[in-house]
Amino acid sequence: MNPLTLHPNFLAVRNAAAESRRDQRSLAGITEEIVLLARLYTYGFRGEIIGAFHATALALEKQAFEPEAIEQLRALAALSIDPVPADYRVVLGNFHRYDQSLARVISALDRGAKSDAPRVIRANFLRAIERITASSGIAIARDDVIPEQASFIVPSLGITIVPLVYGDQHSWNMAFLSGEHLDVPRHLHREGIEIHLGMGELRGETCLAGSRAEVREGYAMPIPPGTPHGFINHAGHEHRLPFIFGSRRLGGWGIIPDVDPRPIDPAQLAVTDVLSKEMNGTVLIDREIAAAGKAGGNVRRTLIPPERTFSPHAGGLVLSIAHIAGEMTLQPESFQTVSVVRGRGTVAIGPAEAELSPHDHFGIPAGARAVVSASGQEPLVLLDAVLVERLQSSSPSTPE
Image (spheres, rainbow, N blue to C red):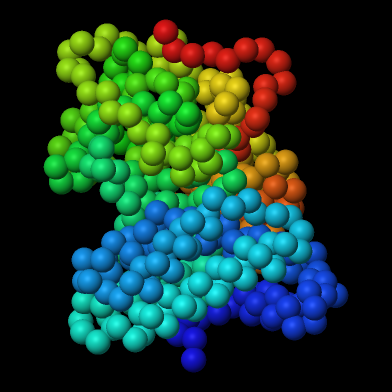
């Protein structure tokens, strides 16, 4: 008996894959809806590469658990570098491999969970995976929760990263700053680009290249490749820092091997204003959210254009904000990550539906049609990000 709760949509994809394999790979039962659902579930599982897959493997290693479960978890993490096709192959390949590997991991956990510690590890793993399998296909992730056994500590920085949405070439994540690691140590990415999102009331300094700027309210700072950056937390308490990472060359989780620490005495950094040119087009995100909340009708506009982070090998991140008073359709050309910052509503992608509230995150596969609707009197305000491979015109802008 499968201990996971499985949504009827999940079972529909599983059954379609099984029937096709029994019938000499017949594609008769693999409809466009089944393909879309398989893509959604596959992207959901990809988000656990350094989440539940990695964290559970580490927990089992500390318990000297049987090797099979650890090997299967490593295999699941390795699947995350495979492209996600937009045709039948995602059903018979990506989704099927995740489904089968998960069954083997759970079987091994069942055999070995004979004492309290392994039982807790098993329960935490099932809880993380069930967020995906029990969903309609739209696996909602939240940035106000630090899940048990589903995060990653960056060895060279010591900060905890919680994965939220993992796309093809970019990801939306949350850095949790606590304990001895209240700051984001200064570092750079050679192959990757980022947008840091300081949200809510702050008391600190954000650092970019050779400058630092005081921040006391939410901001969004674009970071080109090869540019040292960090955050100095003067508040003295824990802080949650959402961030978007992207790279055409490394993919959404290239952040891990691409971290190059660049410590420096803050006194050596020039003091500037957060809206100065040295901060490379940083915007005050809370003010933008408040302004969007007062807009009339449906509006979506760019906050940070791709020029701010673009390089030929990494691409460029685009951050946009949307005000939805009724219903808005999003149909991105490339994978789109979405964050709900105000209001409540619903999202429908094909046969998959989910309710939305602040702190929720979800992804829209390339070419898929997502219908987002506001509920109640308050409009929905969304932030979203895509990674573009080339600029339409103009040249990249980098901080001095």
